[in-house]
Image (cartoon, rainbow, N blue to C red; front, top):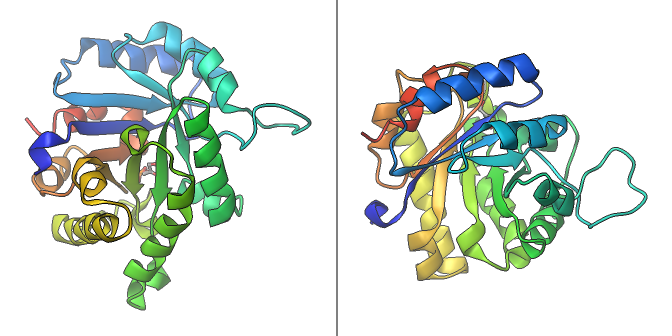
Length: 249
Ligand code: 13P
């Protein structure tokens, strides 16, 4: 039952904001009020991880938006999970559609990153989702199941994983999946987990939805039994984020 899974709302700031903007976000998040039954995490640009961690109340998690698959070494421009932890942060978003489609990250690399981040002690939000042409050619299940299949061998601790289903056609487009469309994929993913991991993981793992979530559509989406929260892009930069955090009432 969804009742056993704590509602989870992540904000993904992407490559937006500066210290002044972060101060504004911290202000509206502190003011809230935020439903204490919702777990809240914000994903901020790597150069602001420490700044954001220091400013936000401890009960709000801070996530990196990416990190590499090894602890250290000659990998110019990359950061490691150990560095994310050293900045005081506990979370990382991996395999976001922009990492997959703008930076061409393949399933195998994302899976290795997830594996190393978990080994290093981080909590991980791996992202999956189909593109428009894949949905239109009825390949949604095939695509998201293949993305899941690549992740599974490197997931050593499911209790530190929150899966984000983000249909690429809904990201930043203002075109949200309908509650029924999203619920349908979430239920299929849960069934897939039952068959390919375990009934226990299928029952306990949170599957959150991302793609144009807004104050006007979050309540309907939050009512669906297999939607355990959201990963929010644009709206997480605005006070709207508080409404979304409180979507489940
Ligand atoms: P938008 O909410 O801006 O559509 O972005 C969704 C997203 O990519 C969150 O990771």
